[in-house]
Length: 356
Image 1: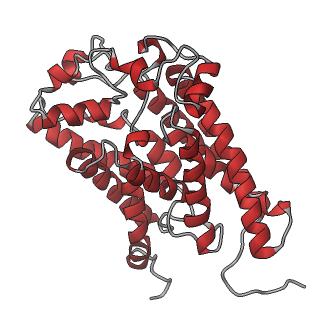
Image 2 (image 1 turned 90 degrees about the vertical axis):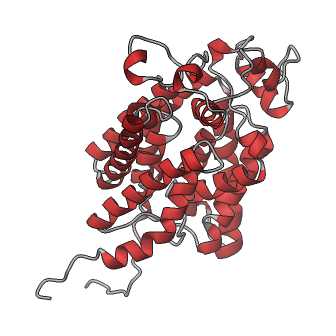
């Protein structure tokens, strides 16, 4: 005889773990590309984040429910740690990732009751708190390794994270600031700062952090070195997840389409002021956000129409924050603000019941 139970119904930990594992697998190519271009700092941040997240989740679970280590079997906290570790600058001080994991696990997840109860994406909660509280450390992105005056190996990456200097005594600022006055600037930073200083995209594109090729004249400004490659890897991983039916296509499709439409409109109106839609799609954390952050099944809309509206709202907010907000990239804030609207979106997009 089957036992009946009232909602909410709890999903199998084994099924959840399988979904989380597929997402982690899909992120591996992009993580490898990021390590190749930006150094071993990302790998060290990943190790710190995963170890601390598992330990913290175990402690909180023991304090709350007195259960055993099996409560970690859904792998959700590992995925949260990986997402946050990839999102922060590779050479951020070690305490940044530890504090971010604490905020993500405690304030973003456990304070609401654990997996399935949180209204906001835990990793983005941690990231947003870090960005608002420590903007200098959270925007100190290194240049691609080959542009540094002294490319960093694993040892130097470790020393930068834990001591702030390499084995030769170089700080991250010193490694990057001698290159045409650039100090840890990302392509989004450069474009936003340049536009505020009334520079054209042609002048901004002269920076060595931008990839120059035969598409330059067509696109006005090309994608930053390393950044479009990482975005491409996340796109491939995201399409893999859709093919495996781990995530739904509506959210990333609506987000990227909305961003592309807005970028195309402004680019056609003022091509010397606004970057091309292709640049928008392959800069910053666009693909990462579309396929691996916005699609969080707990905090995203659950109805088919709602997914389209949710993705479109993220794309709109991302574009507005990038060009009119105080931060170069706005994926975290766009997702969190959209999370607030999920109950309202689901309420008005519920499928009509048969016969009504």
